[in-house]
Length: 384
Image 1: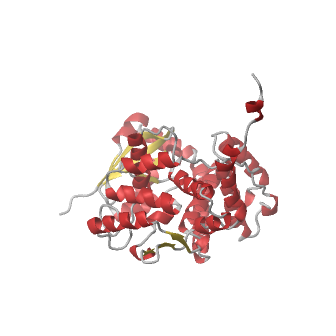
Image 2 (image 1 turned 180 degrees about the vertical axis):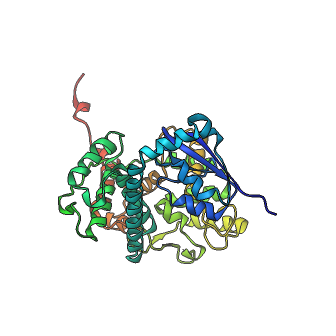
Image 3 (image 1 turned 45 degrees about the horizontal axis):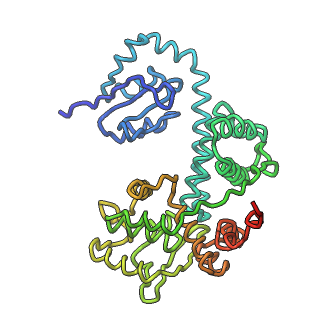
């Protein structure tokens, strides 16, 4: 006879909040039940599930699982006393039932919203960002019905959450975009999307590396796959996702072109491949023989992960002894700026980078130093 699965419960802390930790041998039925619980979350690093203490009901949990599984909750019973633990939950039953109802409403609406976005062919990254923004927003107002939320609530969220935690205007803008799209497709709610205002735009200059710095970063990488990935981002001005989505068939070495498919805005574009880059890619292909994706993970037949790519750059910066907080996008900015300094027409740079508006590309004129260096300072004319 197969031994009954044990479900171990204990108290813990996660992100400064008290939680109930749930550990058990893999069982799809247990997982399915726990996923329905408000605030349930899988913590992959610790290989356990958690539920916020305020949302947890020990009596309900036991009634749900005890017939088929062994519940080990002595730690909780020892700390609170089983009767006290149940008593605490009994006093908050109404609050929890409302919380559960609201959580289920939000989950249902977000699930429908996600399906709708996918049907409209929004990119997976946009779907992920918008849904996460909405989850964060509705979690902040977890005591309110979706229909009760108004424009004043957005002001409160911006003030007491985004600004208080020091988050960027970009996140604030993404929340507004997500709310406009979400409420724009449903009716009967108090939130007037026409009154939602985006934060005032800042105009920071793009971060640019010198050619010497880019060269030092690439030279520091001895692993040929790593060197090719970083080289390709710079030499073609790619976004991180564009690099990882490349397939072998996207390289047209005979014509010296790289085809970037379904990039930002679901647009395809072509960019020039330098002769030196083609030589490097051929050398890489002979060694690794990728089957589908141009750059595959360790297990093969799967994309190289974003996290691993970021770590490659971090390692390269350490080896090159560059102390600047360089990101992968800095390489794209550097490519565009270096093209401009080499005399490439701004219209071609716009096309290569895949910018929808020329105004986006024009920002590189503010960081190109070739013309600025030619300006003679009147200070030099002073007789000192």
